[in-house]
Length: 412
Image 1 (cartoon, rainbow, N blue to C red):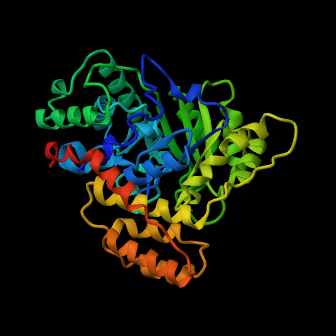
Image 2 (cartoon, one colour):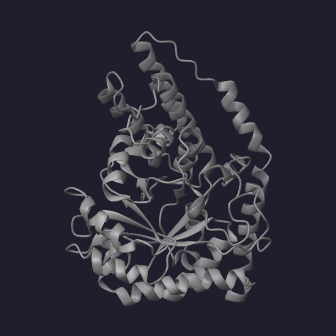
Image 3 (cartoon, rainbow, N blue to C red):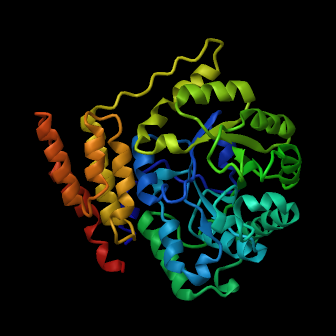
């Protein structure tokens, strides 16, 4: 487990030296990878960073109770590689004191930022007062933000995990993870990392004006707004007019506003940024099986900085490249994740196969595979049906595995 940490050690480099707010150092508009529950795991983020290069990445949201009830789950969900930087840990819950403690753990793991999820519409989350349900309890939302910020501050000022009564074995595992990833020892660098929130425009109706006033009072580094209410879930259309109003409210506040929702390509990104004046966007479902979409982000930045209309060329991705990355993603998931079952990879395989000739049949096969050997068999049979020679580059894959084999004895 955790072997992936050797990958990308020579990535973009840490942005956490000193009291650095990385949000202010990214060329606008910021175009990042949105956190998606059950999707943006460590392998997905690694592949997206390597083959696309978003401006910022987020982990899947992690329950603040996890360090004390399911530490194994926490470490799995907060794994990352250096190539992802700047990388932000997203957490959720409804107990301020837990946010205080988990903020220390996020800092100890070397993340570039901490994001609080106040936008998840799932019933099992909202029913407990977490996620988007916090829109209905603004005072609790502010208390959570304040507790997380105090945790970051106290960590910067020298408080240790031991001071919080955290299990020494858990702290030792964090130290090991940092060393394997090429990061600093726990406490070697204690930056004041920025705090942000990802939320929605309302609970059962749009209340963006009142909700923004609540959040802006906490002087967050960034707020990402999904243009739907909790009640909408992911149905209907995202309300970008509401997001635009949030931008106007936040003007001169020092808090960046990012938009999220229904961005199907980079031309849509360009249009929405022009219309609303958001400081950036986070891309979600459009990235599934499509890490290459971020290759066009510089075109968007250039178009928005010129008087001419946007001319965005989507990156060409050959079928061969698509399948090579599919295999790389599969190998990474199988070798380096802490998930024993290959089932979680199936949806990714199906996404990669969209728009391929005979895609429906290929997807039907991919959602039944249980190991990478079966993925290879499916691709070879598919290539044969097209009369196409597909080189799997197995020597390169073996070299990839050999680089991390020596670490196996360190990890359980």
